[in-house]
Amino acid sequence: MIRESEKVISESEARGLTLRLIGGIGIWHTCYSARIPPFKRDYNDIDVIGRKSESKAISEFFTDLGYRANQRFNALYGDRRLIFTNSGKTVDLFFDDFVMSHKFNFSARLSLCKPALSISDLLITKLQIVNINEKDIIDLFAIFLDHEFGNEPCINIQVKYINRYTSSEWGIYRTFEDNLTKALNFLPKLSIKENLNDILKEKILAFMGNIEKSPKTAKWKIRNMIGTRKKWYYEVSELQDHA
Image (cartoon, rainbow, N blue to C red; front, side, top):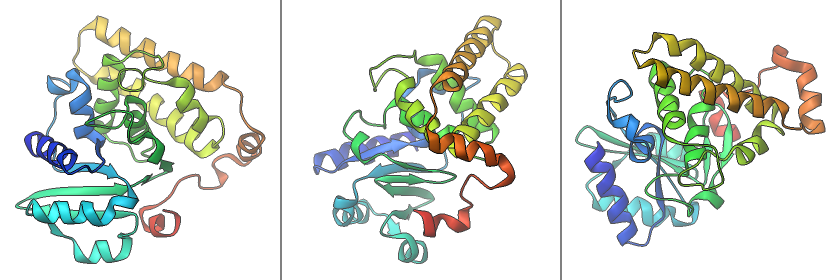
């Protein structure tokens, strides 16, 4: 899948298309730690995001590469998301908005970095997963281990940028905090050197502390009073309505 992802990005760029890798395979391309144990893992598909304005050209591009469209899925969600398959390889393509447990508009961020989204946006795609699993947590560790906090989108975790979401949307804040806590609880189960364990713990705690102390909007405070009594995330069945 790694080689195929490289082909997809290089050939799409040659056509003048804007495609960026997201998810685990995007993290592989931006985090050296994701390439070696214990953070190394298998990738079963290629997740990408592109511009909705280029949707027709992008669809033709994947057809030319030998991919076949998932007719049923694409008929339902084709204006915002498409799936293509080719000999066991699957491409999951989003347009502008990344919508899973939460919704994020990355259209203004697509030109910042390549071949993947910015470090912060890759982190967001993992932190937003309500039912986060072990592979997702390992991806989080690779990001925190390899990248410092700062302002450069292609090499740093941009805390102020991420806080725009966590300080205005209580639901995003809740999911991020829950998943960071889960990551800390999982850390002792991972067989890594003690110094790396300490580095990860320190960075995650610092990140959580910054989220906590960042001033919250009135909208956030009102939603906070309701808390978890009301669902704060999307179910898969709701994606068509909220994407």
